[in-house]
Image (tube, rainbow, N blue to C red; front, side, top):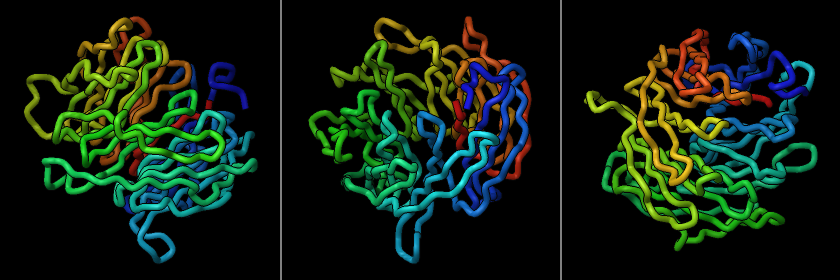
Length: 359
């Protein structure tokens, strides 16, 4: 498959909640010049594929099945699919238990040999080997965390919300909304085993609720969004020290809002965050020397409850999945200042919550 930079169109995969109005995984074509979206396929029969990830060679797609029960027992699942290189459609390969309930995030090692999954209910993170044909094997490593936070309604127990490996695959990090932690693990690249390095964990502000994070290798910083406090906490990756805490909302806003997603622009100059409630994308400028952020603006998402968003591989467009208004908003990114220009909104019946490009 040609990359987005070589072809006028690329495919984008949309994860949904089938417990709401979604029917499965939606496949759209995306025009890399105009930002136009066109529906190609709906892959039905996939329960609550709320988060997706693709192998780096674009041959396989993996989805969490964010359920509380799988095969009559408490737990969720993880599914694998083969991507048709001609039309982008998906062929189901297999499904395995996620080793916890309500799995909500999945990522891969850079060599595509392992998948890492976190379970929002059950306080677990797990590692799954991937076969040469793209199928998932049963988990080889499962870690269960303990803890809680001061917000008794949301932090009664650990609630794992995201997990990712460093680019060298030596260490993994996982954000825990329930315990206000970013956990650090040693990762064995041959076996897939995870070892919790407690002395390397990052502690966030109590009650803030760590959700998603970005790693910036240029300035050795980790940027963690907090769902409950609507902030970004910036840490030195090597030092472990907190560098900055900055709000994702304008000072004038006093309503309820919850951070959902965070991404650094490919050029490394801009950072974006989605705000559910304020219904906006916040733009920050990134200091290349010390990693600190400067708040610049917010942009209406032209929808309700912006969950996941994605920047296209060329860095020209930003697309937002608006969960409650069932639409995808497309913005053009100004390469000089990072400002967003609204291009279009595509209505769906999907309850969209995750967007992933096939590069």
